[in-house]
Image (cartoon, rainbow, N blue to C red):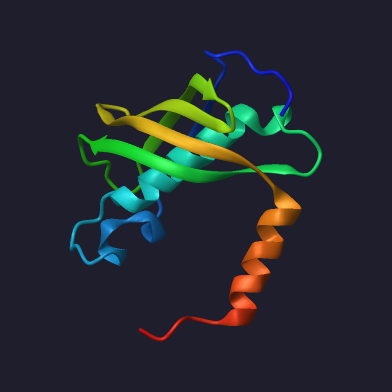
Length: 135
């Protein structure tokens, strides 16, 4: 990975669509679902480092702590912010937040690991070929 400064940040804006709503996750409310919000936070963190990865590198999600503070209705816009707070060898720590037009709706920390893409894909292919273990 090429050098990157702590404090480097990115933003991502998203309009809540029907497919993003909790109604698709076992809830009956047309609001942004927490799993989708987590995914959007990951995308935003990925944007922070995308121009700093060396050839053949990629990042994968490693950990997430989050608090979903308020609901965002379908059709509203949510703005996500990710800021690199720490680099610990191959682990990248991000502060992530989201807000809609009324509230801060999400805060948390997201951690991504820098991995060699070819090795990762090789291990994934091996796992897929081996198939699941009967339990």
